[in-house]
Amino acid sequence: MGRMEQTSSREVYANPWMAVREDGVRRDDGTTGIYGVIDKPNYALVIPLDGDRLHLVEQFRYPLGMRRWEFPQGTAPDRANVEVGELAARELREETGLRAANMRDLGLLDVAPGMSSQRGRVFLATGLTEGAHEREHEEQDMRTAWFSRDEFEKMIAAGEITDAQSIAAYALLLLRERRSA
Image (cartoon, rainbow, N blue to C red; front, top):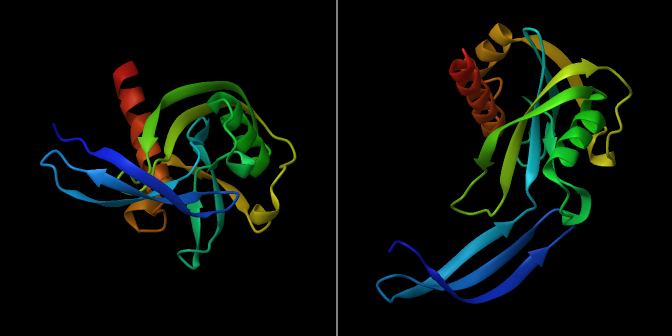
């Protein structure tokens, strides 16, 4: 009950970061229709935490036409499947230059389950040491900075941080801390 059966599928667009497909579906009541799906590889998001400070990245987000602050996050190049812990360490190093002695899995996020197959794993990075970043060409405009938790929360409340994955990841961190207390 409550499922759809795929009756056909065709890829309508693909590039190194994503593919779009159109599936024919049959609903539980027997009616048919189509469903558009954006297939993207799973991603890793990392919350770099040093005491009371969070490390964020800021970059221009083309679809929005503006710069946005968020936690380091990303996928492997060319839609490759990479072990998620390895991916998290790589994203942290590439975007911030930070290396973590400890990476703790905080949970799973679905980006936009009504239209995308992409899922993300959230990691807490602690025991941080600084080094040189290794950014990809698309990340050349990226900036990084440390923010206190209070500053971070005020930025969310003010609409300065709107990245849903970053906000949801922070909620996972708060839940983990509450359960550990």
